[in-house]
Length: 397
Image 1: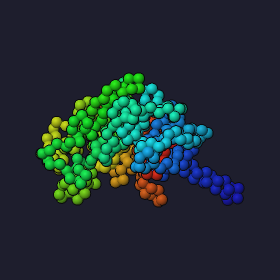
Image 2: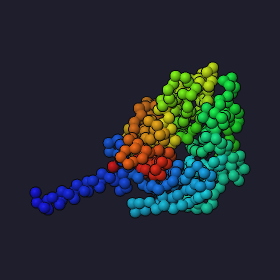
Image 3: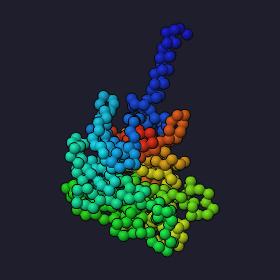
C-alpha cells in the first residue's frame, strides 16, 4: 500500500469517526435510536432546564429552574445563527419556572409557583400576570410535593393548568394516611388539589375557571389531540405502595403510571384507587367503579413529565399523530423517549416504541431525564433534560 493511499485511508477513517460523533452538525448524544435517527445535543450547561418552546423562526426558548430554591429561575433564548445557537437571557429571578407554551396570541405563557405570566420574547421586559400576581385572578395553590405549573391551550383558546397534589397518597406531614372511612380533604371540593383546571380566556384575560377533571395526582404531561381536540394526560402514580401492602417486596413495578383521556367532570380516582381502578391499600373498601379508568397503563414509575402529538413530516409517515412521551424516572422504566402509535380510531393506544433508549450510565455518560417535549417548525422533536442540563433534538440523520 502506498503512503498516499494509506494517508487517504486514514483521512477517510477519521472523517467517518467524526461523522459518527455528530448529528446534524452538533454533538451526537450517545444513545440508541431507531434506524435512520440520531439525537443532537444543541446546548448544554443549563442548571435545571424544565421547559422548552420552539418558535416559528427556528429559535428556541428554554426555561431553567436552576434548583428548588425560590426566585432562582430564568428564561433563555437560543437564537439560531450560522449552524449554532446564541444564548440570550430573557428573564431572571423567577420562582421555580416550569412549563412554557405559546398562546394563540403568539405570546409565551410561563408557569411559576402559584402564577402564570405571559410575555413577548422580542420584548421580554413587559411581563403580564395571567393567573395570580397582579392579574386579579386567585393564585394557584402551589403546595407540597407537586407545586410546579404546566399548561396547554386547546383550539378554542382555553387554558388548562395542572394543579398537582400536595401529598403522595393523602398522607399528613408525619406520613400518616387518614382513616379508611374518611375522605381525603385535599382531593375534595372547589379548591381540590390533584386536578386539571380550565381557565376560560378572552383577549388574554381569564374570565372564569373550573376544576375540569379531578383525582389526578400530578398532571405534568398534557397534550391536545391534533384531530379530535381531546385532551390526554399522563399521570405520575403514587410511591411507597409497598409500605401499605404486606408481602410486596418493593414498588418497582407497582403502581403503573397512567395515560388518561380527559373528560369534563370526570374523577380519575386518586388517592382512592390505582391502576385499572383497584382500591388503594389505604382505602380497601373504596368503590372504584364510579371513577374514570385509565385509557392505558404506562410502565411503573416511568415518570412522564412531557408529551406531544407528532404532526410533522420530518419523520416516517408511521409516526403521524403518534404520542411522544418523555419518561423522566430514574428507575428501570424511566430515562427514555417513547412513541405510542395511534390505533385504528386515532387514539394513542397502539404499539409503544422506543425513540431514545440506552440513556443510562454508559461509559462516562450520566443517566438522561427528559422533561418538556415539543415539536419544532422543522418537524423535529425538541426536548430539555434536567439531569445534565442539555437541549436535545431528535432528527433524521
